[in-house]
Amino acid sequence: MTLHPIALGQSPIALVASTGGIAGQMARNFMLVCVETRFGSLQAPHPVQWLSDNGSARTAAKTLTFAVALGLIPCFTPVRSPEMKGVSEAFVKTLKRDYARVQSCPDAVLVRLGHWITDYNVHHPHRGLGMRSPREFICV
Image: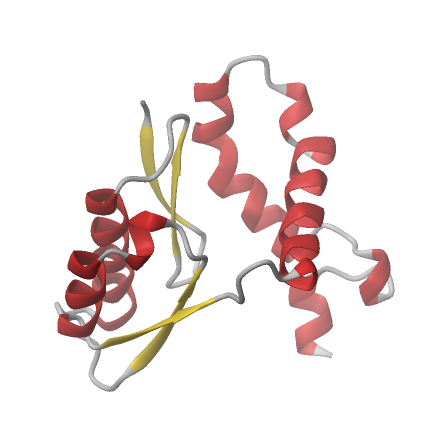
């Protein structure tokens, strides 16, 4: 299993990717990296919602307790929500089609993933946004 924490450009968001799934300790480490990167401390200065799916690593009592200690309010996507599933599947399909298909090795994909997501958000035109990137769409 390969784990690559990646800072995404100027964004205070981080990414954790693995070729073997995300375990509870990895989820908690990810939470800590995000809080430290965003707020420069071990705890958010005010309650912050933390949205994730309902995977066992994210809903475990130990992870929920850790989230609260960091000042996070755990929130979860609706179970069996076709809309949420469609959004995430469309994103994954775009990454595979426009970025990952040119890589032959899973570890090479993980190394490049942060750069691809930054490109997707900053430069990649989206039909649903009038052929603008999300960054361009937000700034208009």
